[in-house]
Length: 166
View 1 (cartoon, rainbow, N blue to C red):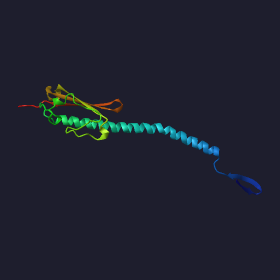
View 2: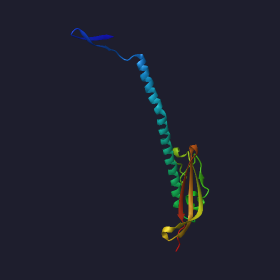
View 3: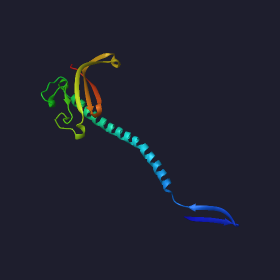
């Protein structure tokens, strides 16, 4: 240690001591830093979980929308023998299982999409349209239920009107 002493008119004015941090001060600083870092860990973990849930939701809803659009473009009253030529009602009771989620041509979706199941219900329904004078439109309600890991479930519904024949 080096001491530095200033004298002015033979009187001692200031005595200072130059030194580094003691071990005790370093330990206290390390403890404070550890507490701050450990208090942030749950926040970062929760953020990561929310991010993973968001990505899983997007994937599940996307493959559900693909199936809904596949069904929507099908002939309303046709009856087919394979999924490639199914009509609307043929989809009732259809389901995919994890590891076997495919498009209409039988092509497997990406491996990240193989954690979901999809099931379809097609039911007759009618909708009253008050903005058009209360007319009733007949059709089918298509409901697709997508199930993912950790009991996550998303439900997509679309009303498809019966084609008007002149």
